[in-house]
Length: 230
Image (cartoon, rainbow, N blue to C red):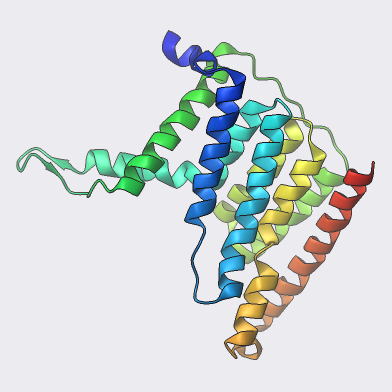
């Protein structure tokens, strides 16, 4: 227990920053893929926005927030994959039912690191954050409602938790960046469908949610520019 409690002090702030940047770069590398440039951008742009927020929070000395955002945006599934892999062990054949691939191992290591770092703050009782009402909180509520109706409750929660983390640690700018990341794929999805010749074969719901997503993107961009000017 003491090891976990002191885990956050295991590395110097500079080394921790390097680790965060390295994990971010690795995460970005995983985002590459797609049949055309628009599908690639559909995956790439949201991730790069998340990384901007993560690195920004880390450089702002909000390391706990950076680790929390990385965990919730990219490595929760890795934790589940690790548990599934471990529990797939069969005593009769003395082997695992899941193949331990290199990506699985790397992702598991990252998950364990992030979890230990976060738990060290929780156990130490020094995690301080607060949430104040304001325009960005209202925007987050609107975004949550949008994600809920479009994707369901679980996706909405996963989409809204990262910007709320940024808000609780006092960064409205990075909260807006993370809100933007949640809908940044929509323009590229529209363009991908247009180039594939299927844009006008979608349901009314698709157009409705796409239009509202574009509105959210506009609001986020305006908000980011406003914060950068102030």
